[in-house]
Image 1 (spheres, rainbow, N blue to C red):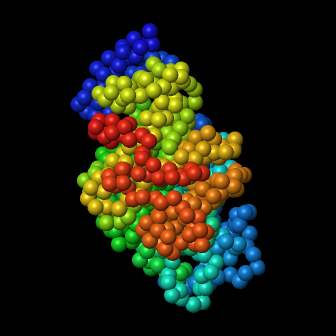
Image 2: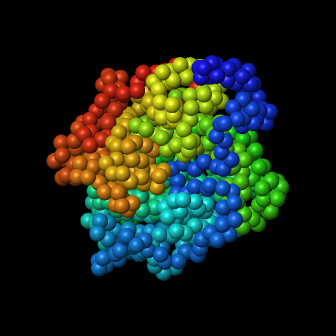
Image 3: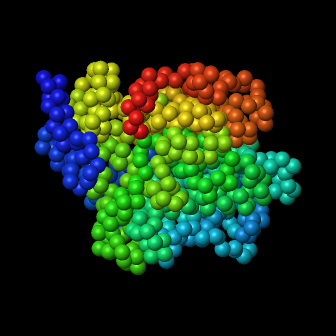
Length: 611
């Protein structure tokens, strides 16, 4: 009987979403209302979904709490787990002035260095401006505020303690053996980290991203930056950047960090000619964009992309402007009244951002669920979708790439959207709403593989395959076909502890989205998650691979590695190529190279041609 229901639902949805009509005019089709009429029991989320981030809004009633949001001056606030020792404070002279940091057990640290002037007042929606030089010695002994974001809900403890519009700062971690009083004979490679958070949340100073261990272990200089988020970083209210918000400011902030690194990193012992940019989730998406942006080309040498959501499309200018108009409506400003928009308080901007998100995001437009605010195709800085650019070779293909996903990326997203079991009938409706005329083929491929009454695991696997794994594989193979050097991995380790880290970052019984981060940064203890001895070994081995890639452009290179890495006899990580059988590195406690386990599934998605 359930199969008959599925057939009827497919017929109705196929008529409503016939090819050529589903994209004619989004305003003509209200998927939520339509699906309610044919199946009233479906879950419909009216609040925004927030993935891989430090916060979750359960109800728009919580927006009233924004008035109490901590928007602070930049006051001293050292994290409790980052005490200094008695070593003398390191001092360096940058192009903009002197900076004094701190020395701790694993590294020299310089927190909160300004890389651009504050984007406040009339400069709220402007490209980042060169930082103004300062007199005296700048105190870099404590992190500055994170960029503006909503911070409430059940995991508030994981949120940044302070947020501000004045947030364009970076942190630098330097190995202890660097002597700032005498130049290094061999400058160290630089690794620039871009945090994730769906372009609406996150912070470079989150304890999870503490760079001291990776810097010390890999013998590299590690840089992490804050960049503008949400409406502050991506609002589009018009085309003229002088009289409107033109968007993509968060991406420009990242680029400004790269420029700052080129000008200043040498005094920290870093080599500006050997910069690796790396990021996870929205951070990986940012990395992919910089690989496409010509003005970013001379600013880094190679890249690491961790859990890149390739199939989540960037908004067109039209769609970004539509979102901007909805945003302005929530503020009682006209979208063309830039003065009115600039006069809004930060709380008012955040409130409008969240109300707008709740209006346009719903689980039926599955991909938009994951990214309401973010970069858009402006035709200048960003000209095409990343998956298209990689397939056509419109990226900096001469740069070595390290690509990877986790084995169960989709678990977090699906279980956050669907907090109750999803039946086969419901899953059929959702898949049809998402894939439209391709739905029957998708259902035929996946339905026979899942027999449980609750089909959320099936939906999670579809997200893993369609959004993350398979388009990454396709892009890697397209790169290899034109001579690029690519290494691929899958993080496949399942947690050995019953704790769930933030519920959204580290999963128990799943190698889910973000699960590799506490291993890569060796930062599991910040969440009271205890690594077993073999898990510490996995963490160290991952650092060996990432460090070797930063030094040489090859994760398996034994040159310039630490003594530990040389003595470990690490499994060889072969370059991804058809001659090697398309081998990927399986990162688990017994790491090994293997043929991709889901190649047949990715072949299906490749042939379907709908990335």
